[in-house]
Image 1 (cartoon, rainbow, N blue to C red):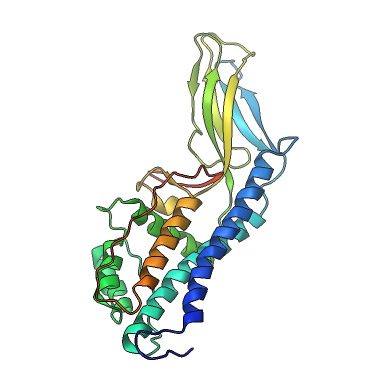
Image 2: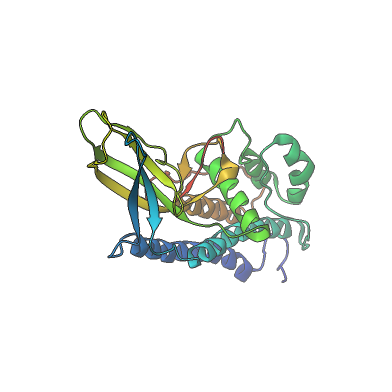
Length: 289
């Protein structure tokens, strides 16, 4: 790679960064379509089965996957988070090249959850870029006292990318949202699995009849979504989704690249509104995991 003087990084390399984010979005659409096809398939790929306690005082309802969730969903997610994380790192490389005229091999986009870690491990990674992007990046570090959606997005992206790259793919399950549930008069419902990411054989809910019985009629309106757990985000919120994450990264990447040639200027960003898309997939955070 070459540069045409300070302030003029190689344009194809800059355009390639933007295209990485576009590619992530295209992959997410493929994933969303595949998930919709899975959940809406006829016959249904899953069912809810019931087990009754021997004294008839509890009716436990479990998830049964008749068709496993395709492993390709996990591979696609890995490709999405790789492109997003790589785009952020390459932004820093281009900013350093723009400012110094020299290719630096120590650059990366730092994401750390504590100020101490950021100072020790992250700040030096962006020492060659200008004040504008450097100040912005520090403000985006997902410290515990920071709770803007972009903080969650960067925290999630970094953890998802590290786990997929170094440990194992993220396995998908189903999460359920019950619009309405009707049971026999006097019966009590315990939604043990509501809001959780459930795998084959997992408990969804329990019903306690007013008097012991081996019969139980349950009418329910259910929305199922293909979801993954994000246990490293425990306690940092309730949920985020892939569309919001991509929108945040796209906004950040464009803002950083637009700073090329003017890195001393402050960067002010209008972040996209979260929840504007109704996702079939979500990254579920579980407090206390």
